[in-house]
Image (cartoon, rainbow, N blue to C red; front, side, top):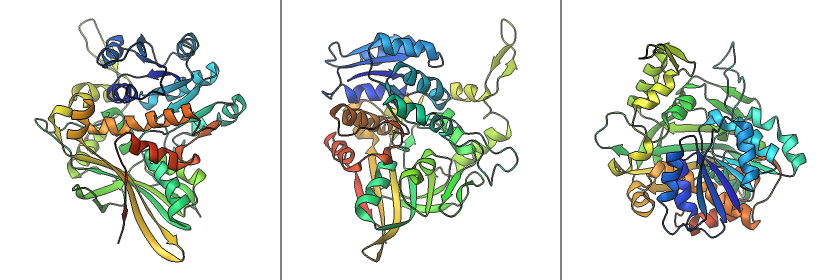
Length: 407
């Protein structure tokens, strides 16, 4: 398999380190707008041979992406950029006749009049609008194939197939006890994406109502996370699983809740109140005259790069899917989860826990596509494909998943 990886940030670099250990990969072109980042990711690989190369690429240049896919004879495009670039990369892969994999879906837009009651443009709507063209092409666009969304969706499919007869609720629950030495505020993942998902109206799915929205940080609950992480307060956040799971899994309710903490929520609210979450460019005085910049990009530039924080981080991160329903006529409640200890991911791969946990799942998916264990055409989420091959291969990668009976 020949892969074009677009994005050589923390997640993209972790992808290269994981993929370098697997035999299914014939060649990976690592492309980034900043060529030095792509080159650094490739140079850092041990015993890479000629399986990796670096190229400069503007992810917003749809035609340029299409040309590079053709020039490098790539079978699949793996998108490791932020969601702003989903659609040009998605369309470029379709035009080039390549398969496509991403970890976050096309952006949403709130309802103009009732943002905290009704959906406007939902996450992934722009991609699903092209599902017919993807199916006609015979190519697969596997969307939301990170950890959340991604592994969490695989867990939902596994629960429906093997653990339950009927499902009342599927709730993705994410929590951690990570700390970063020397920083009062240092998000462990892209602040650009974090602002997007946390300040947009969260989406909830109910079978008799469909998709609807609530206010940010609604429905707080304390969830007890495994492997020593413990109780963490979680709140509703906009996330792709709520838009993906109901398309392929029969459940009466689907939610996503994130363990943020009061301090983190307060900072996000302050950014919103000051307009610093905006992506609309504003004029700012510069040495050569006024320059136009996005306030959110400025916030991101002022904070440390999450990929560089691993040496200062301690603790674990947990991604998982809580499922409640019945099996053989009896009530059942389980939590399927995946925990990564930052010390382990740094020692083993040199990548901090959150970016490594995100990166391992698309690599597993690529290997399943390369071997034929997964196949399909059109625009599909992870829950549209058989879960057992994925979970078995994830364990083979040296990072097992867990199942906890609740109650």
